[in-house]
Amino acid sequence: MGAYYYLVPQLSHLIYGQTPPMTAAEFREMATPLLTGEDAALLDTIGLDPEPPKPDETGRELSYAEKLPPCGSDFIDNWREWERTLRLNLAKLRFIKLKREGAGPAEPPDFPVEAVATAAKAVQETPLEGESVIDKARWSAIESMQGNEYFGRNTIFAYLLKLMILERQASFQTETGFSEYKSLYASILEQPAAIAAVGTLSAGESK
Figure 1 (cartoon, helix red, strand yellow):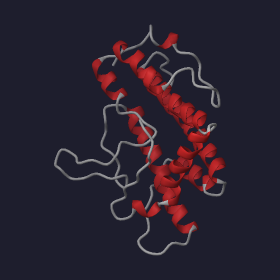
Figure 2 (figure 1 turned 90 degrees about the vertical axis):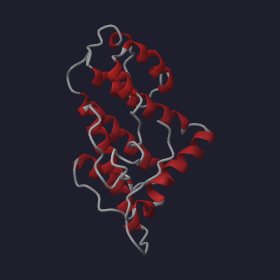
Figure 3 (figure 1 turned 45 degrees about the vertical axis):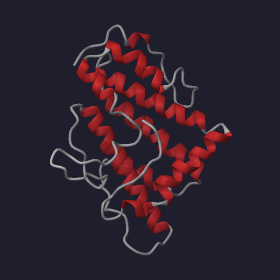
Figure 4 (figure 1 turned 180 degrees about the horizontal axis):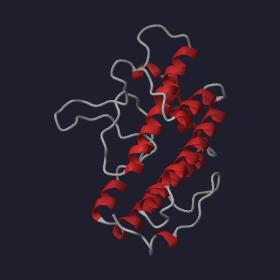
């Protein structure tokens, strides 16, 4: 892994709620040539949605109900587990709140505790307020996971995730974006049965 003394100083400081200075796609295009091959490949795995379920090397299909295998970055691994915990807890709490019958969602993890608490708070709010609760918690989690190595690759990974959050927030300010928002929120909270025995969940958001 490299130290990015040239790239990091070029990045403008991101503040939650601001208009994103560039898109996530533009950032990837700018950063990729300046990264090591390993880090550039990892950049392509980062998204607000944990990596979608897919077969592992043995052909066994993975799901969000299972902890994803390590990808080569502690930051990305921790982020995926935080988001997975959030989504599984959201699904279970929504299932309970709606008093649905039938097979319930997969039993969610109880750690990280911040993700569990975020899910509990979000389901008590309106959908739009719930999204704000979730994104603010995501932002804080990303900052806590980033660590103190300012010129390290975690700074690059965290920057990409923050841009994705800002893009989502900006999209909610338009009619088209609000329609997308409702679809996203519904996929997380309104369809918890999708995470039943196999634990799968479609987030509907791009990486």
